[in-house]
Length: 277
Image (cartoon, rainbow, N blue to C red; front, side, top):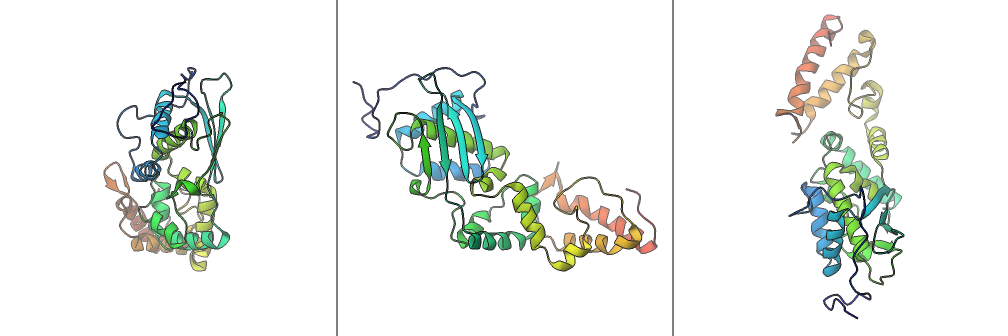
């Protein structure tokens, strides 16, 4: 019986997987499996585990669309992968969730910098986020395979098997477009992160800043300008205190776009008339 001798975990001869229609093939069919810094970081950590041939075979499965479904729940990835048998294999991959105390420390560190919220809402993970998690004694991305709890319904005894590896590569591919998945896998959804940011805002700001800012960008709500002039001024003051953001719409920096808007609102409020928006 032929064996892959470079991988001691392999117990079965090589087999050809059944073809899949509309599988979740990765968007990168050649070269690196990730584009953004956070997705590249995840792949680098993943490939540093020294898992050898299993990861290579999983990468091929990921690129050919053998992963049929993938769902990221709280601290859990659940997926189906089509192998050589008719029934798809069920894969689950989970991480231990941070404790309540660790999350409190992470929440406070994220809330301390207004720029974090803006970057997250712009679809980017702040580069300092790994340090924030590390300071709370948690790895944003697991530094060792021993931190990961993975299971697959296939008969291979190896862990990870190629099906688990394929799911991790598809997950990395999705991280490029949706960085919130990194936090979801650690146990917090987008809504939970933003809600705790709202709760962590200083009392003065939560009372006076319009409730839509900055966590639900969109059209300005109808405002009583006489009653809410303080809200506008406080929002403008927060904008003035923002750290430089690597966020742009087109080629224009985010804060450069908002600055003139707040200037116009301040002038209108000072004159007693609502601005034309």
